[in-house]
Length: 121
Image 1 (tube, rainbow, N blue to C red):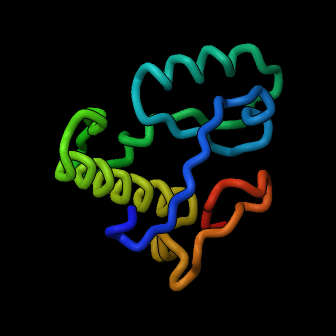
Image 2: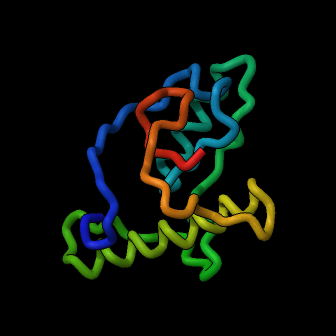
């Protein structure tokens, strides 16, 4: 991330039941997570979130990507590039064609919903 000028302070958390009523989309990065999130969503009455696989947005159709944890720098770079492609395609879908996928010259800031995630809202 540093190589690409992206500041990062990683904080992970599990998906909470409230997330299904709060967010429009929940994007998963592998089939196992997708199954788990779908299972959890079935326990929620008012699930409004669309639950999808992030990699399904890859214009290069790489639907599966290996976890780079035990790999090398090139493996991490490949995952980063795929993530960028998928996020841009996803944002184009939800924002509409012709709008920039990423805010220009805009530092990451909290989305306003949770005050933690660095979304470009």
